[in-house]
Length: 85
Image 1 (tube, rainbow, N blue to C red):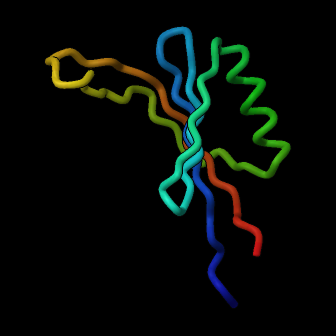
Image 2 (image 1 turned 180 degrees about the vertical axis):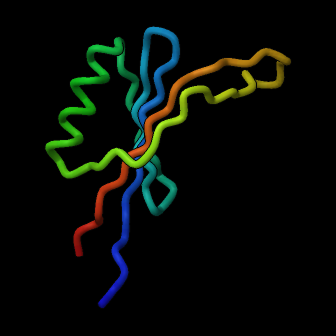
Image 3 (image 1 turned 90 degrees about the vertical axis):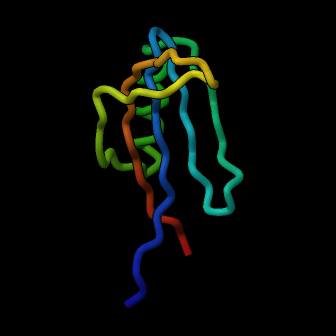
């Protein structure tokens, strides 16, 4: 039996906005900006109906903004979906 191949995605909540990133195997990742948390939850519900599974959550991710010594904290949800074929 062949191992299942997965497609991964993240939903990042940054302040009052969000960003959805689908991590493509070829490195051509798809990024979609979402204007509100309500819209992000609608996107998450749609992802669920398309077979995406929630696999993990990070409550606080710390990232450096460009080369400045400032940091932005945000929440990240991880999802996965089996690749057909």
